[in-house]
Image 1: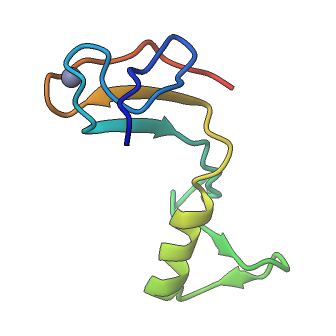
Image 2: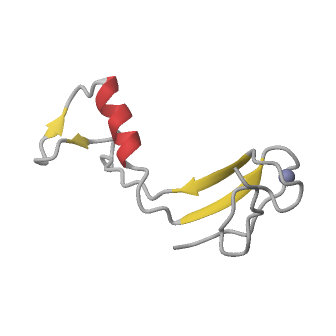
Length: 90
Ligand SMILES: [Zn+2]
């Protein structure tokens, strides 16, 4: 694969500082959580809005997955030299 240093638009596949391809993208996603005002315990609901009393690990893992939508902000970071891009927003 040809190395293209990341540019100011976030185009490219390697670090503009050291040309390493060990570059991560750090995303921030919005996550909506419903909690009881008084107990501070999280209230989980299924797609129909019904309360889920005992969520399975699989269900919690799935929620984690689907929360990775609509990134609000992201930053590129080189795992070799530590270079960081400016933050990107949609
Ligand atoms: Zn680097």
